[in-house]
Amino acid sequence: MNRAARGQAVQAVFLSACELDVTALKPGNVRRAKPAHGMSAEDFIASARACAPDLCVAGAPTGERVLKAILSTRRVVRCNTNLGIVLLAAPLARAAIEDGDLRATLAGQLAALDRQDAVQVYQAIRLAQPGGLGHADQHDVAAEPTVTLLEAMAAAAARDSIARQYVQAFRDVFEVGLPQWHADLARFGSETWAATGVFLAYLSRWPDSLIERKFGTATAQAVSDRASLLHSHWRSYRHSGDIEPALLNWDEELRAAGLNPGTSADLTVATAFAAKLMQAV
Image (cartoon, rainbow, N blue to C red):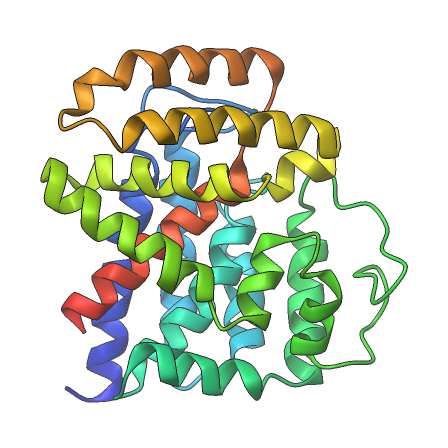
């Protein structure tokens, strides 16, 4: 398979992962027939379709992929539906188009990110206007970057789970998300429930970056603690129906409070994307 054909295959896999994003039950997040936070499932699907060609084109650097994907997204929606997804999917897509081991190729490409990548990613972030971004003392996105994208991500890694993936070569995806995905896929025979398990695994381990930015550390930790309790129950069940009522109740509580574990959802999409890439490309 040549690189152009691999790009088309990667695009199909990306769209499949984004479809799963609005199908799976991830408490507090948008899904089909359950809009939230001023966004609907249709907004997410339209965004995925708009940005997929730019994310999955052969030969483009990571920063260019991110910027063009967000520009394409803004043509079809007027809110931030997918910045986190794009930031995570762009390096995965780029690595998958190359012929080789996905994890090793990804690590090499991330290590080579340069200042131009940072310039373009900063532009994309300003366009997307993510919630609760605020001001950073070091490498603030409101200014032009003077460092490489990897250096900028390293400065943010302690407070942002997406930045941490860049710095650690997606270790959380490969060592937390993918094992959970495969275990739950084998247990339930369902990608939608595997995605729910992955979401709970991330949220139980790390306070959600989006909630922390918007509502503070204490609130983010409380949500994470609740996820940890549900995840401990989750591991003991063999049928999704056993825990679904508890998840639906928590979903309503989070929505009523305006709490959206969006970064954990973005990591879930990245995990599904990686799992499907490793199988299909």
